[in-house]
Structures are given as structure tokens and as C-alpha cells.
Image (tube, rainbow, N blue to C red; front, top):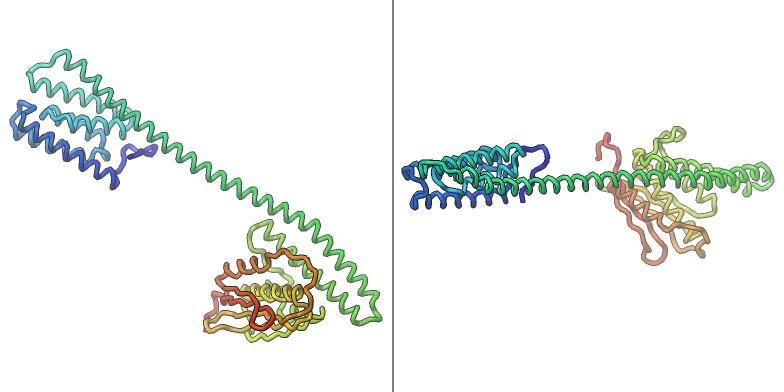
Length: 383
């Protein structure tokens, strides 16, 4: 059913209404043929035929020019006595034209009926003046009623769209508020405890002057705690702003290199071998590669302590970077807490940059985490 958006004076036909208009034109032509043969008008049949054809054709444009279509239908009825164009044009004007246009079309229809009555009988009676407006008024009211219903449906649809937009806005605000709350709690709890770890490690470092191993261990604890605070600040920035954090001025926008990451694991007692054949990487690629190796080593520490772990970084044939972290079977897994979503989050991070991630057991024994990361530097040309 054709609806009229608010503010438009008429509707442009679409495929469905176009078929309806074509059918109505054919009906009007058939009635015009009957008006010629019966006849319904005392005027010469060529005049009736031409007027009927023109009035019927005008119904094709009734939605674009509803008032003009109603006037054409009234004129056609006055000449031919064919009620088809009169009723169709009157209904169209009442439904698609502004309210004033609908009643103007009703006045034109009444004038057309009076003209046909005068042409048919040579006079106009009181009944010709009084009774036709009743039928014309019913048609106009029917069209206005449907137009009001269409406008109401459009209004309800607009209200529904506005309600959806407001709901999405409320959801975004709720998510932002929740992220802020989580960031505040993480800062209040984690930052305090990690700071205490770094403080105690520093105090122990000052006292452990006679035991080099103990002193190296405390230095590692203090350094790791400091790095954890830096990472925590980055995570809090993501939670509060929902955008990527700005590069850290202290590191020049780069994560610590893989050598330092592997060295920290070695100092903690975990044997790790690094094979880095990729060379210098763009900042964005290095960031992702670092996180892959970090996650792989973290899982090796938890699930295969003291097992030999091999970290390999190289270039792929298409210019990307291939990363793998393979660990053999180790001792009993350590009793360390974990969320179980590390690989899930890492896979999402890699997917967002257009890479791929695979993890699982390897033939024989052990576990391997492998990924392919694209060369994320649009200024460089891939060889």
C-alpha cells in the first residue's frame, strides 16, 4: 500500500503501484468504450471517445499530480458520463494531495456531475445539486482516512527508528560508564598491589648484597613489576577512551624488544632460544609480534615449566612476518591463576590487523603457537 511521507505533496509510483495504475487505466478505457457504444452522453461519439481516452490516460499520472488527475476525471465525466476517471481521480486527490486539494477535487467532481447532467437532459435539477455531494464527500473522507492512517504509520516508524537510536546511545553510554568503573577498580586494586611488589623487591635488592642470584632475582621482580605497571596504564587508557593508546614517550612508540623479553624468561629459570631473522619491523607489526611471543612464553611458563621453548620470527613469501613459539613437555604445570581468554584476545587482535593465528599440540610432545602478521607499514614497499 502506498504511503505518503510527511511534507510531500504526492507520491512517485513504484513497481507495485505502477501495475495498479496500469490496471485502472485499462478499466477506464473499457468504461469509455461502453460510454461510446451505449451511449452515456448525448455528445458525438468521436468527442466522447477522445475525451474518454484522454481522461483514462490521465489516471496513469494520478499519483504525481493528484489534483490535476481529479480535475481531468471530472471533465471526462462531464463529457462522456464515464464515472471511472471521476471516482479514481477524486479518491487519489483525497488520499495523496494536501487536505485543501482533496476538497478542491471534490468541488471539481461536483461541477463535473452537474455539467454531465446539464449536457444529458438540458437542465439541472435540485437533486443534481444536493445529492451528488453526499457520495463525493464519502469518497473524499475515505481517501483522507487512508491518508491519515498512512501518515500515522510513517510517524510510528520514525518513532521506532528514533527509539532504536536512543537505545543504542544509552547502551554506548552504559558501556562507557562500565569501562570507566572497571578501569577505576583495576587502578585501585592492581596498581596498588603491583607497586607494593616493586617496592618490596627494591628493598630486598638493597639487602641482598651477599647473594648475586638472589639479587638478580629481586632486580627481575622489580623490573617486571614496573613493566606490568606500564602495561596496566595502557589497558586503563583503552578502557577509558575505547581508542588505541598513544605511543609511550619512554619507548618511542615501541614495545621492549624480543631479546629483553626472552632474557627475562631465561633469568627466571626457563630455557628459551630466540631465532629472529625478520630484522627491524614497523612499529605496528612489532607491537603485535611482541604480544604473540609474550602470550606464548606466558603459557609455556604456566603449563610447561623448565621445558625448552623456541621462539622463531621470520619473513613470509608475501612480505609478512611469521612467528612461532614452541615448547616441549615440561614439569607439572604451575598453580597460577588465569582467565582462559588469553588466546581468544590474541586471536582477535591479530584478526583486526589481517593476520592469522593457530595453536595446538605438535607431533610427539609439546605445544606450538604460530601466527602470521602482515607488514603494517603503508609507507614501505613490500619486496
